[in-house]
Length: 424
Image 1: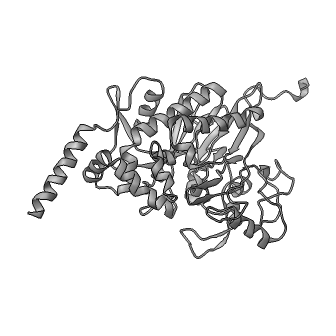
Image 2 (image 1 turned 90 degrees about the vertical axis):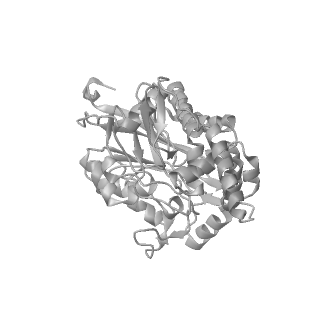
Image 3 (image 1 turned 180 degrees about the vertical axis):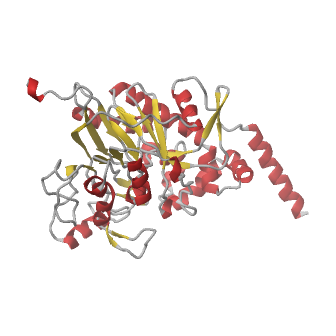
């Protein structure tokens, strides 16, 4: 770089990296398997990390959700999540049943809350260690997580609450902030994973050397209320961790208008691409998507890094859509045919339990783009009580106790005694 090309002293010059991994149930059966799967994603990213400038690595949505399978291979052998759920609940009955009765939540949420201490600790410590080892700013993806507060040196869980939550870490493994998903899909609501929607008013923007980060998890990036709030907060880098639970070339119709059925890639243009090409403050967006068949569920998509049309003038786009400016980097799909019916057929063949030779043969890979932003002006938001608790946990200054096992056993005994009395 010549002296005339030198950048302003406070200009932010960094690299964004999106990882598109493939998951399977086996990745979540043990602590070691989960750590290895998460580490493999940073290893995929390693050759794409820039030297001499900060790196932002963004992982995918709900990459901690299948930790409920940990230690129960029998649940995986059932083949479907519908059959696995009761097996998991029965295996963890002494811990899940008291949560069910005490907190008046569904069985699936009771199960997740009963296991949340171990899952949260494993997830956060794994991500912290990876951020430190690879020296990156890390958007950890997202995972189901309760709200916590500090009580002395212990984290205390808020009863009944379980958010789809993104955690942001700096290269020292310190907490930058967290964001909860506001708009849940039907699969995340009651009858599915049964998560708690996050409050819109709690969305904030986090200033960093890799941009003023705003997170819109999956469906949130399609919603104008979320994008408007992040733009009002000065967001310059939109992070959209994603897990699209359907064949990529299938059609969809989601709330608030389920009758608006269109090809998934067409719908996806209404998220990150639209936010960067038509928005105000948002200059770039990073949208990694996980692929792979997880038991009987199908996940597919095309990860992308988007920007303004003038930043990415080369026309290109998702399959089943017309080429257009705005894509700085785009993961090719498994096939680039011009025939829409051929693409839809390939999507069906990839899907879970299709029985075709191409079943589960998705494309994995890594995208990167070098990004530049002017000096930051966004103030650092004060940490929430929940963030203070997670920060203390990551620094080793507080512990996260598991659910007490004696009281669940007493509760279970009481329930059985009550049942026997009623029979008399």
